[in-house]
Length: 73
Image (cartoon, rainbow, N blue to C red; front, side, top):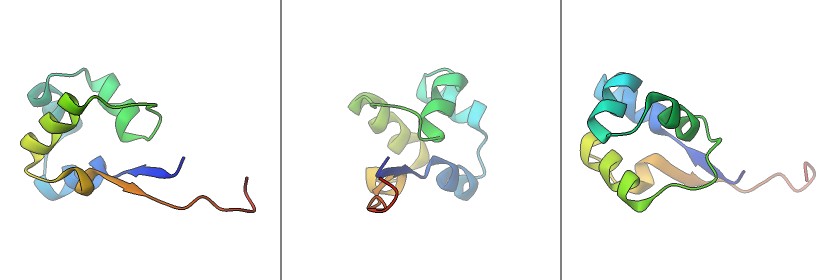
C-alpha cells in the first residue's frame, strides 16, 4: 500500500505505549495495532484528529505516501 503509517515513530518520540495511546484516543489496542501496522483500509478523521491531539503532532507526522515499486506490481 502506498500509504505508510508512522504511529510507532511518534510513540517512541513521546515515550508512550500502544495501550496508553489507545486508552487516551478511545479505541481498542487491537484497532490501534491494525492502524499502526498498516493493515487498515480506512481511518476516520475523528480518530486521526484524536491521535494528533494526544501525540501533539500533525497528520503528516503519522501518514506518508510512498510510491509503489513499478516492478513489484
